[in-house]
Length: 232
Image (cartoon, rainbow, N blue to C red; front, top):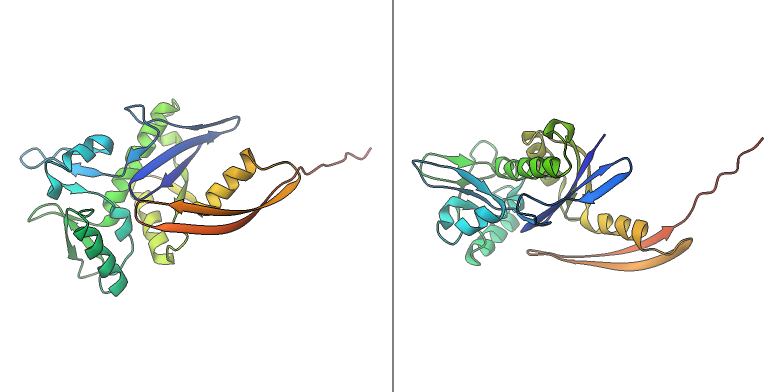
């Protein structure tokens, strides 16, 4: 069975496929190992959806038709002062070129595409995740249906309802979330597997300088061999 690993950042997303005896960071359709989280729509009458680097190019021509950083609105209530402040700051910095409205039933944000059509953040993030699943499957020579289980990184400060919103977005993309892993924890595991000295404990400070947030974590990594003796 194959598992899709997704490093979901603010601006960029990376993917890897793990199978027995095989692990590789996969490339998208333009041979890049990092993919923009952008989702863009061509204006009517042909509202074609474009993602990744192609969608990012639309940002400079039709900014109102582009959704970027939608994962920062996952599960966040519009009535929350911190959420409203963050959304305003991002918009002022031109990181949120689109308009938002409040979903009266859920109390969350919806992203405005035009006068008659809005999308929930889960829908936009689901589009990105499905896109990632499809190019990862193609790069690994698998059918999309063979790549359903996934592990996704989340910020260490993400609240429970924000994590659940990400799981809901993954379900919209046809993915089954096996685990959500904080970004510093994911780095610590990678370091322990690939670079940590054998049978030695190291204390590390992990700093993740992302596009929208700075995370730091103190971790203790031990790479030990568990020896088992066979008894006759």
